Length: 148
Image (cartoon, rainbow, N blue to C red; front, side, top):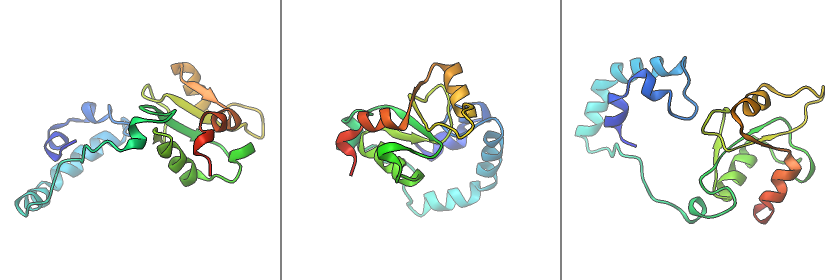
């Protein structure tokens, strides 16, 4: 939430952030240390280094409120025309947060069927972690009120 927290975080702490894994975390720590003079100049110039905490109406309501949703594969059914950016926008519109990788923080994985019938690596990881896996059709029903 703040630049001070980022500057004080070690690689282990950064791995707790959605989307940051064991390879990215130490690189981020190194980059933040290397950028310390620039960050100090920005702070001295009055740049706000705190993440806004405004909760929009969409974030506090909707069928995906408080949930992290990861999407994998080409959508089918009512979502067939939706690409990655449209799916992310739909997730946020329904109150959720779009994730890029499956982790313990993931609430739902929307997994389109693969052409070979073999589950994706994200679907396998979701099953291992006990994450709810929905087909595009089931997900469309869940967010039906938010579809264009």
